[in-house]
Image (cartoon, rainbow, N blue to C red; front, side, top):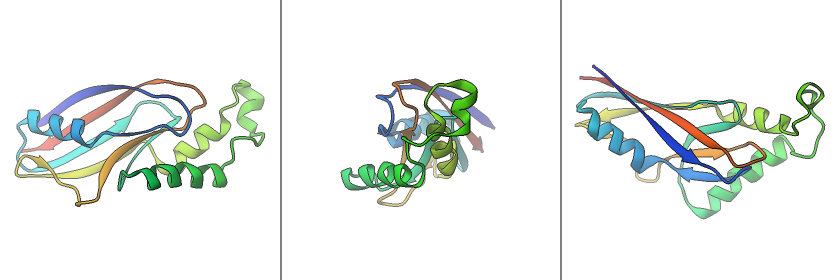
Length: 138
């Protein structure tokens, strides 16, 4: 069986992180699937999905790390084509990726005690994002 929902979130722009765990768990519960996997995918190329201990320190550390690896102030070839100032946004999002897959057991999302699903906005401006949550199983 396959069940799918789209979650719509609003972001505040570059470095904004949101905890999606509860919303994904609610989709899993509505799916009626007892055992399987859930796939969480962000549409678009300048945002990322992952897991982390969603606490203030790490919610600052992760964007700080990405800004050191792929600094926003540098000139990127992407800007020569589009002139939109978000070359770093695409590269940062690519480092983390647009999706995760997690297990479903006993009809519930299965994560570690200190593990939450997050969305990180890498673009330079606020965005409305669509997150596709697909539950597979029986």
